[in-house]
Image (cartoon, rainbow, N blue to C red; front, side):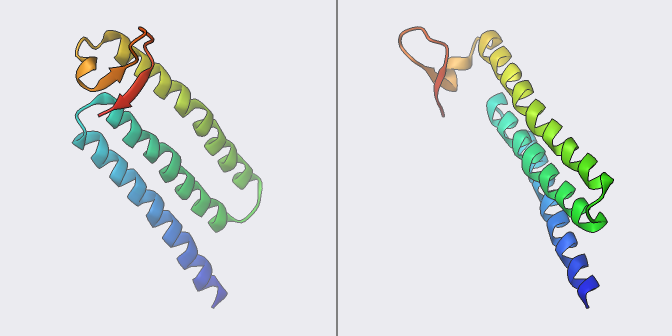
Length: 116
């Protein structure tokens, strides 16, 4: 009986992770503005990968493989914001139509204030 409960817990978390990946992929294709696309893909990276790896850790038990999977999630959580920030700065500096989507502060600071 306990094995079935363990199986269904792993399956439920895995399905949540796969659903997060599918929704992130749909968001990347649905949204037209690159900042919105980056937000959708970031959710897929964080939530989807976290749920899938958590289900794999629960399925395999606590061993060296679990530690490697945790290090994989840590690596993704540290590198994904850096790459997203880099891509957003490139978009702000190279897109001549950025003011259609983002309002900037009046003092010339290029930090985005609000995304429409």
